[in-house]
Length: 95
Image 1: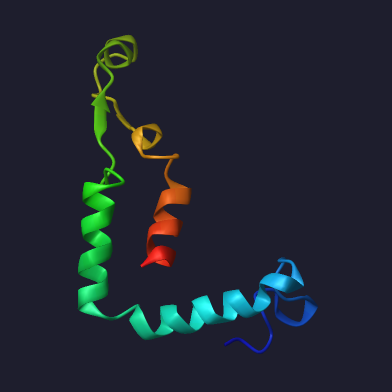
Image 2: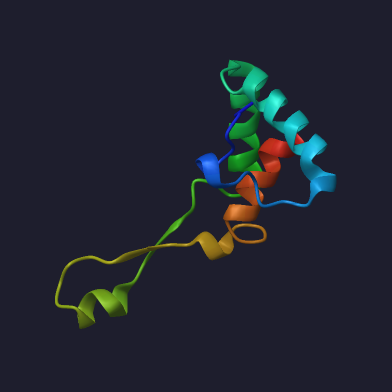
């Protein structure tokens, strides 16, 4: 655990006090599992099979033509369940 918090001498974490015990527990579990190969393999499986990661690329043909030749691809984060940042965060927490 960090003695000074995320914001150094000037503050801690911006969360309701009622969540602090749960966040400390989550951090402790993360520290135990972050280097565990079985955990990382299972998380990778869920990223690929459930969340659709890595995100698919879409060839933007019309934009490529409009811009004069450089091939333009769009990373389709919008195709992930609930967007990208929420599912990335929650899958690790659930495991």
